[in-house]
Image 1: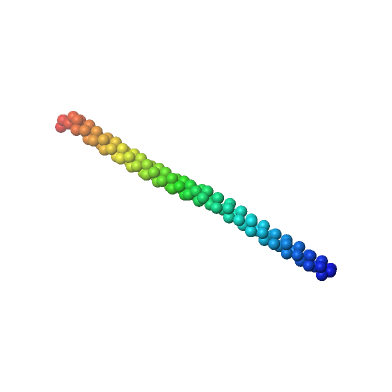
Image 2 (image 1 turned 45 degrees about the vertical axis):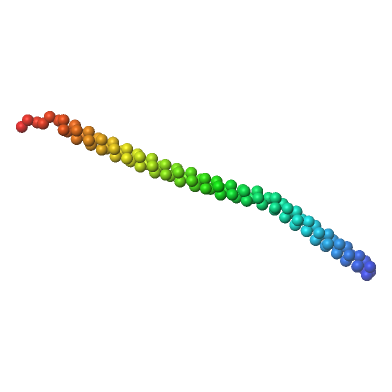
Length: 101
């Protein structure tokens, strides 16, 4: 290869490297623009996910509290029924005629 051909090849390589660097810079700028556009949407997406988690936790807490309240109400109702049954039984005993002895 002659020296002029070598210079030509080296210049071509240099031009290709420069063009590649320029393309990389433009690509980087494009990525920065895309990131700037998408960043708020991504933040909103994650905020929505967190809000859904909070809503779900609140709903589960409400459901647990309701279940506990229902269980306590059922327990109280059962105790009231038992107390009423005992009172009715005692009342019925009071009305029994006494045996004559």
